[in-house]
Each structure stands twice: as structure tokens, then as C-alpha cells.
Length: 435
Picture 1 (tube, rainbow, N blue to C red):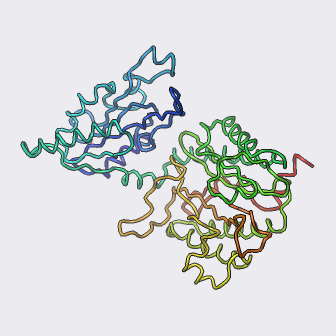
Picture 2: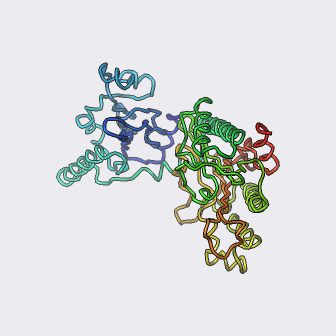
Picture 3: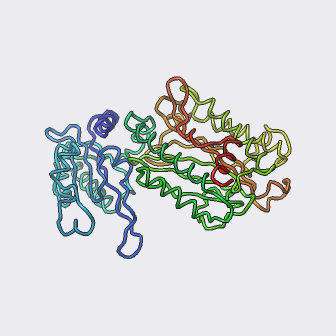
């Protein structure tokens, strides 16, 4: 997969370019403890290498070595504390590099790969130490070019190229996403079976994330949201410490990460197994919008179309519920719907849960869906407690329904349909282990 990705990137580079990618630096949690390490997605996309303190150089026109890695050398003492390192020898053997050096040799060796470069591709801001080294190289090269006519004098951010490449997933990527979504489904189903009034939000958080791990996930793809009652009207609520009350809804937004690829699902369900009348009214409208939006996804349709459709459908729902008053077109024109629906209806999914994909053409127009794209669809309605001018029965209700949609040759496939979302199915599942 990674060799294929490098080849595609090289084709986009054009002649005269050399690219440098740095791994993400470790991030301190406290004192001498670090967060669980996660490699920079672009670095991983091109290399598959997962250790910190590593650098990838892609030099397509070098006479001998076109793909070079700089990695941490083997170190018995360090490995006693922090685990095995791949090392120089095995990095070449297992990761396909033409040449591998110890990371300490980067300053000494990089010059030979930049001798004939006209452009250097590098993303500033991802690794402060490497940024300093690259800017120093750039300054020296510019000065050299003034004197000798040799050296690169252009620094180019490769992120737009990789953003475009990562938009359409290859077969291996899709396999990982499908596994991530299967595990995500298992976590949500487990939570819906276990929920009951009196539990705490963190009880469900623990269950969801342990289910992910027990099914082979690396862990959650993002901080798990378990929001009960009015907490569900906060879009990225992650405190997860409230006791779940009877006759309230629980919104869980959670996804597993498998092979560095993410799943992302949201379901909203009643803690006691039965929707109230007000909850049912809002839920059904969101569900109908959810189905209609997904139904329109197919190759050739604008990537912006699902969002525009969501605005129209949900604004009409707000009118029918009495949340807004007026005409649909005027309310949309004045962004009045944003009081109850505040975000775009979905995002691309991949190595990042909000995948950094280029969804617009150079002229600013949205691209069209193509087979191999994966997008979340997550319409919702959120009526915060204290909102004035709305029917009181809806106050404190937040509902979101989210699935992961793969664009296929003939239309689309819902990768996460295994989590129930019909009202009767949800009620049956939540009640199945309690009554």
C-alpha cells in the first residue's frame, strides 16, 4: 500500500523536486510520561513506519537512492524501558527503503539528496526540530544559488497533493476502514444493550472503548462522546461524568481505529428503552433526513450536495416542530437553521477521523463523489435548555444519527448499518437485556 502511495505522490511532484517528511514528535502527558504515540498521518501514508524521531526523504531523480529513511538506531538500554526499535537494518528490510541511516546522520547526509533539487517539498509546523533544520537548509541553498546557480530556492507544502491522494481510498485502506467500522458497530451495540438509568456516562464510555480493544482495535479514533440529557446539545461534549436519568436520551459518538484508519458512528437512544413523544418526534425527522441524504450519494454528485440537502430537510423539520417560524427559503438565506443545526452534515473519513481531504477544485467548486471515497453523514437537531421561543417539551433534546458511507461504482454502501437506528429496533435492543 505504502509503495503504491509513494508512487502516486511522485507522479504529482513533477521533475526537479525532493520531498522530506518528518514523523510526529512525542507529546508529553506529564513530567516524564508521554501520550500513546501516533505517527503523523502523511508520514505514515507514505512509509508505514510508526516510530518517532524518523524522517522520510523522497528523491525521485537521485542516481542511486530514491526512497531514504532516517530512523532511531537499535539501543538495548532504551529498549528495556520503551520497547523494541526497528533499527536501521530492519527498516530497510521491512519498509522498502533504498537506503536507511541513523537519525543522527540527517544533517550530514541530506545534502547529497538535495544537490540537483529545484524545489523542496516540506510541511512546516508538524515537527519544530525538523522545521529548524529545513529552514537552515533552505537559507543555505538560496545563498548558494545566488553564487553558483545551483540549489533549490522554492519551498513547497506537499499537503495539498497528499490531501487529494488520500481522498480516494485504495483496496487496503478500504479493508482497514471496513474493519474499523465493524468494530465500531460492536461497541455501539454493546452500549445500547447495557444502558440503564442510574449508570454514569463514563460507564458506557468504558464499555464502548473496551469493546473496541477486545475486537482488535488500536483504541478509539477520537475522544468518545457519551452525552445524556441536555449534554447532547453540546456537540463535542467529552466530560462524560453525568449520571444518566430516566426518560432521557443518550447520545454516543464514538469510533474505533484499526490499522490507523478510523470509524465514526453516532446513535441516540432512550436510557430506559422507550422514546418519549417529544423525543420520538424529533428523532423521526432526523432519521428521515438521514435516509434521504444517504440515498442521494453516488458517483458524479457534488460533495456539497448532501449538506445542502440536509439544510433544506432539517429547516423544514424545524418549521414542523415549531422551532422556527417563516418560509424555508428565507430561513435558509438568513442562516436561521444554525441555531439548531450548526455544522456541515459530514466529513471525509480515513487516517484522520476528519480526514484532511481536498474536496474542492482549483476554481473553488466542490468536487464530485467518486468510487473509493468514504464520508460520514450525520444530520442532527439540538434544542439547548433555556432556548426561548420553542415548545418547552423539546428543551434539552439533542439528536444526531451518523453512519459511514462508502461511495461505490453504482451508488453507495453504508458501512455501519449494523447499529440499529429505527425507533422500534432501538427500543427492542435497549430493552432486550432488561425486561
